[in-house]
Length: 368
Image 1: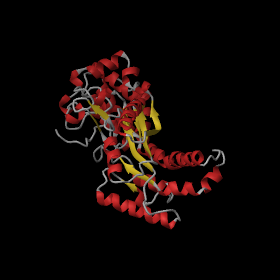
Image 2: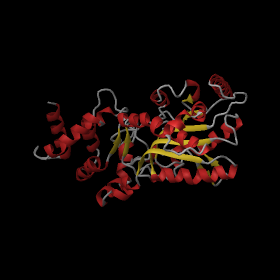
Image 3: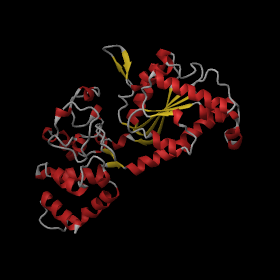
Image 4: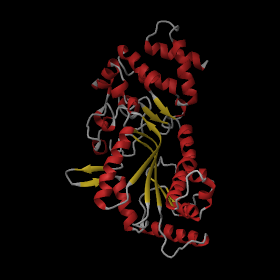
C-alpha cells in the first residue's frame, strides 16, 4: 500500500500519464529510503523521504523536474549515521593506535613489523596516557570514540569541545599526573604529548584555518587551539604532536588545511599539524565537475535559490551566492544528522525558506 501511494504521488508530480515509468525508478528510491534517507535526523515527526521528494520536486517547473530527480538518482552522496559510526569505531584501532606504534618504532629504532615488542614497550603505554582528545564540533562523536577504545581512553583525556577553560585544563593535567604516577612514570610536571582534534566532516577547511588579509592574522579553530594549548601549558613545547582527524573530508579541505596550517605553525614556531582523513571525498564528486549542462543550468537558476540564507558566517566562504553552497564547493553530499551548507542549495535549503531543500539543514548560526 505504501509503495502504491508513493507511486501515485510521484506520478502526479512528475506528470507521468501512466505508471509504467514509476517501476523503473521507485524500487531504487524506496530501497534507499528504507536503508538511509528515511533516517535523516532533520526530518520532522512522521516525515519520510518519498513524500518529501514529491513535495520538493513540486517546487520546480515541470520541465525541470526530471533533471532534479536525476540529481537524486545519479549524484546524491548520503553518508548515514551507521556509516559515520563505523568510521568512528575504526578510528582508534586503525589510526590512533597505529600512530602511537609508529612513534615508538621511530623513537626506539624498533622495526615496525615487530608489533608485540612495540606494544609492550613502556613508551607505548606512556603515549597512551599522554594523549588528549578534543572535539571540534557536535559531530566529533567523542563519546563514541571513547567507548570504541575499550577503556584505553579515560574520561580525563577527552573533552567534547576545544575551548578549554583554565579550571578544566588544570583538572586534566592534575588527572594526567595521577595516571602517570599510578603507571610508574615521572609525574612532577605532566604534559600531553599527542593532541587529537576530532570532527566529522570538512568540505572547504575555512572554519579550521584561514588568513584574513585585512587584519593580517590567521583565524579559525586551529590557531585558537594551538595558542590555548601553549598558554595553558597543556603540552611540552619541545615534544608534542598535533593531529586533526576528520572522519570524512574533501580533497579541497585537506589541501586548504595543510597549506595554511603549515604557514601558521611555521610563522609561530609551533609543531606542524598532521591531517588524517578516514574517508576522503575526491574532487570528481563536486557538481562543478560531474554535472551535465542541464543540471548546471538548474543549479544556476535564480528561481531555485534563496540568498536570504547568506549571513556573515556564509560570507567567510568568499561568496554571497548560496546556489553552490559555502565556498562554492557544489557538493551533492548529505550527512545523516544534517546537510552541510557546502552542498548545493537545492539539497540543504532550510524549511522556512522557499524553495526549501530536499534534506533541509538546521544551521548552527540562526540569524534569519
